[in-house]
Image (spheres, rainbow, N blue to C red):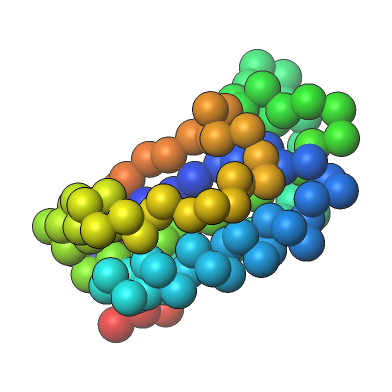
Length: 118
């Protein structure tokens, strides 16, 4: 298993547009081997004393935090899919994302422990 995680500031009034954008993207990722995607809309994101999700992405007034992760079979599958999606133009959609992509955070992780999965 390989996990790609993102933290994204999304304008609150673009929640529906974000959901549609994410659902369309999930179809593309699935067709390239992604096993699971979870998209989570902010419910409780407290302000920290030193840092927090909002500060990490320079969220502005009126923006909510989306926390999302993708599960891939392994690291090689993720990188091969990324290369193929850029090569075949899968990620080149006419619709702009409903958020400032320059402020999202992406990180990829090798799991060290997992509960509830085989």
